[in-house]
Length: 212
Image (cartoon, rainbow, N blue to C red; front, top):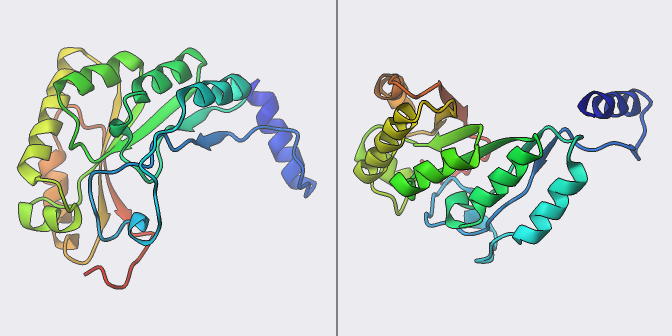
């Protein structure tokens, strides 16, 4: 059970054990290495990411192994999760296993069909990454995306969430960067609307010197 697993983790930690007879409380499984954007502050700019998706069968095998132990799964990583058509089945499989799921998206693919599919799958928490409140700033950091199109997608998604009376927890997130930090107040004002459950300003954890 979750309680027993937590106990094993805690006692192992207190004893200084390296080999723990327990499962991680949270697990990140990168469902795809693909991404449609080229953001200058992203670690993808410094490494090779193959244009591949995580195998659905292997994903289900992992969930079968951790079921009843691991409490939270992030089926995403450095890629854009909505580029993998299996993301909905991955979320659904976690939901059936009683595992809480969190997905982060750049919202470029968040059309009406995908919005309904995320809700149908039983996603618990959706982080929507929008690093600016104007086209000039946003499109500088989210290279390849169009501000007005993304904003339209988000508004449409929030309308669907309201229509379906979904309890999907929605986080609007902006990474604080040199050219958008003056927009933080506007970011809170822009997204203080129905359907948004949290507005988050995330500090830049990568800090690439060339990003201005």
